Each structure stands twice: as C-alpha cells, then as structure tokens.
Image (cartoon, rainbow, N blue to C red):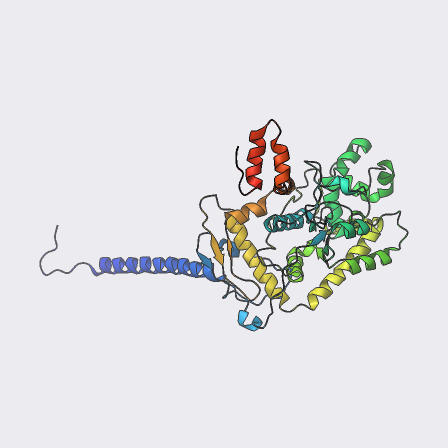
Length: 461
C-alpha cells in the first residue's frame, strides 16, 4: 500500500538504512585500505626498526607480504636507512673463483658446496670431480692421488675449485689448485654436528642392533659410555669422535699439537664459515671473494630429518648434560670450534655496515625462496633493485632450478659437462694432417662428419 499523500516515511526506517550504509562504507574502506597498505608493503619491504641483532629472523606475517608476481621489487624503503650507508664501498676488483672448500660433514656443507658448484657451472670452472660416475666424494677418508678424479682440461693441469668431501690434504691441494686459490672451511656447534652425524650414519641403529638399546635412549647411552662403542665398532668408528677435525685433516696419528694445528689452519685458510650463523658467514664470503648478492643465494640441501634417531630435546637440563658429556668426549672438536668461532666474530666486528647487509640479504633471499615455491609457468622474471650492497639483478625460474638441483645430480651434471668438453677439445685439436690420415680409413662418413666440425672447409672427393 502506498503512503497517503502528505504523510512522510518513518524516520526510524530511514535512519536504520543510513546507519547500515555508513557501516558498510566504513567496512569496505578498512578492507580496501588494508589491501592498499599490503600492496605498498610488497613493493617497499616494510619495517620500522633498525636491525641490530644477528640472530633476528622474519615473522610469518612479514613473509606473507613478500611478492610473487611483480615486475620490480624496490628495496630502498626497507627498515634500513640506506642514506646512512651511502659511503659503503662495494668491492670493485674481479671476483675470485679459485676455491678449495673443506666440506665438513653435517655442517650445512651440502648447501654451501651446492652454491659453489652452481657458480662453477655458470662460470665454466674446472672442478675436482670423481672419475667414477655416481661417486659423490673424492676418496674420503682415504688419501688419494690423481687417478681418483677426472683430469683437468686446463693447460696448467690445475683445478679452479674443490667442493666435495675430501679430507684436507695441504700438499695435495697445493699441487692441484691454482696458486691464488682461497681456502674456505665450515664448522658447527660440535654437539649439534654429532647429533646429525649420529643420525645420518645410523650409528644408533647399529648400537640398537648389537647392544639391544632402545631408540629413545640410544644417543644418551652412547654419551654415557662412548669408549665402549668406539672400541667395539673399530675400525668403522672414524666419525665417533672429533669428526670436525677429521675433515680438516687432523687425526690421532698426527704428532702436531692441536694448538699448532689450529694456528696452521688459521694461516692457510682465507675464511672459516660457521653453520650456526650461515647468513652472516655468506656475507663474509661475498665480501671476501668479491661476489654478488645473487652469487650467495641458496636453498638448503640434505637437511637432516632425523629419521634414524629419536631424541628428546624438551628438557633443558638433559641438553646441558649432553653438552657436558660430549664436550668431555670430543674435547678437541670443542677447542677447534670455539677458537675459530672467536676468530669469526672478530672478523665480523671490523666490518662496516655488516648487519645492514645481512638484513638486506635475508630479505632478498626470502623473496627469492617465495618466488621459487610458485608453480612453473606462473612466475615471470622479477627484478631486484640495487642497494648500496648489491647491483640490480633478475631472478627467474632458471635461477630457482639451479639453486634447487640435487647435490649428487649436480656432480653428475658437471661430470657429463667435463666429458663433453673433453670430447670437443680433442676434436678441435685435430690438424688437417690428422684428418687426411684418418680419412683413408673405411668409415669415411664418420670421419668426414667429425672433420667438418674441425676444419673450416672440407672438400668431399
């Protein structure tokens, strides 16, 4: 029924309609504002405090704001005030690619070695590779000779890089690597390393089988009586005690005092990385080798899932007891680690704008990892803007694939690349006389095909 002429609609209904309209408008305004703020955050890497804690990581809320589909990412408006680091001087010399890396077991060494092998592949470097296909180390832990690895294709017969498991051998490495190489090592908190070693090498599984221990207590059983297990499993016990020093070439048979050996390592090595502070370590590596920010990006490799070890870490007192027992058992590893850790932090202390660069690196790496997680075909290349610490560079799916490649497959890929280069080198070293001699043989088609690759013009008679 329509209202009678001259009668106004109810004010209460009209006011309710206005109130509802205003509420909806305010709600939509808040939603749109948040979306706009998030969009700006995506492009500016929002933050509001100065980075001053080397152990700081990003919250999950921050990570959700990292962009995936954008043409460019601007780092200039991050929490770091880049105007205050304008006087930072980036390395201007040529990057150093001659590297000897001690790939210490269970010290994030697959991750770092994978980074090195990616660089070697991109720069076409000569890497010391096992001669045997599907072999993933260079004779570790035995001393080896040249027969164990593929020959260098360089005129000098030396190699640009060593990045596989191989006990550090000073004389052999001096002979094999280029004279201007940088020796790089990596260490880790000894107890954390040994827990990972204990799991990876199935030490607990062997103890459970032979001593009828329980999975839940086998690690603590070992720490209570390590000498018993050490003697029982000899000679297959090389990783049972001081495994970190073993990879650096220090054994019980050496007559050199540990203090002298540590000084020797400090003198020979350009940098010792620390797995417990990997981001900080890689920024030191970047600065030392004059590499780019893109060069030191990585994806974690061979991260232990502890499938072979049940370990209760809930009790702080239990952890302290384990630390005490293992420190007593592997005291030399602790001396080695703690001495080099002090050297590491002293090196950090003299760096300029170090934590600002670490913060920038962490942010860029999170962006890259988020980008690489997206399904294939959805990602278009993304440009990372320049900062005082890095030039502008592009991230794309090719970079993701290179970073994500399985470490063992990377070795196989480099072996195949080496053999292909060797074949091409041998073919292009043919002279015209070599060809004419070979051409007299019955299979002319094969040799003619080869000759066309070698000689500018080959006339078929």
